[in-house]
Length: 379
Image (cartoon, rainbow, N blue to C red; front, side, top):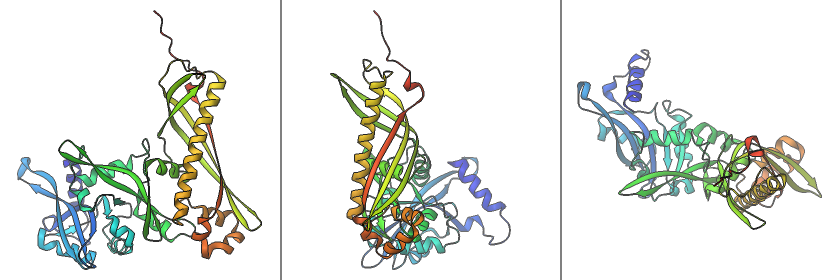
């Protein structure tokens, strides 16, 4: 962390003369949390970097500062009276939003971050599952020195354990303004470990326009990831039962591709969805299960297909209850059948709410899992 901050400061010092500012007059902001205050006011909490000590013994430590105002910009400007410095946002990693504000609408937050020339468009967005967003910035980082930096690292490397869908500012804005798709934001909460509270990113908040309308849990977020063709891997653990044998099977997804095909009959739209998965058997917790046999492999593949089909249907049904097309089926219809889209575009959220789907999952066990036999031990 110290080396990273030194690089950031070096970048400031070596920058050209345009917009030149003394580093002593700036406080580097790493993360922003926005909560609802009294009335229509906002409470902003910012994680900044503090330099403690002098010379070779100096150390950069993060701390949080907080202010309240009727506008987000006003609260941030008020922080100057707390820090004595203007906040520098070019290296901000995360923006955390409280559930209360997310449900009321996050347009004021988006307006601020879009207008501020220093905030990068690849900053991560998160919705807090705790009572406030500020609690997240007050939690304990495990690896990084800064909680904002740690959250950024988790979101950036989420693919092996995809229980959420990370969303950067630019991508959220793109979906917010695009026809036929609703945006989502990853959710973050706290778990207790001993006397410390640690962050846990799991699930997503889904939206209609700029207002949050519901949650998806970790499993439902995984299903949505496959439907969105996210480039992820992930593990799926299922119980195998056949011919008196039982075992916990761990599948690792190593490739996924979902294709869509709309069908229209008697003015009714049905969306055909086919997800092709390539998986390997990461672990079989019963060495008597001979997965080298074609019949066993077929059973393993059909079990996985049935499980994911049910999970995808459940996820889409939950989204339909809130008329939130986070899958982007409207954008599929718009591309595949522009004329049909024109007839339903103005009322798409309601049309999506009653849309029929036909979901098929086609997993294939590949690599060494096809030929490897169980380990046989001899006396």
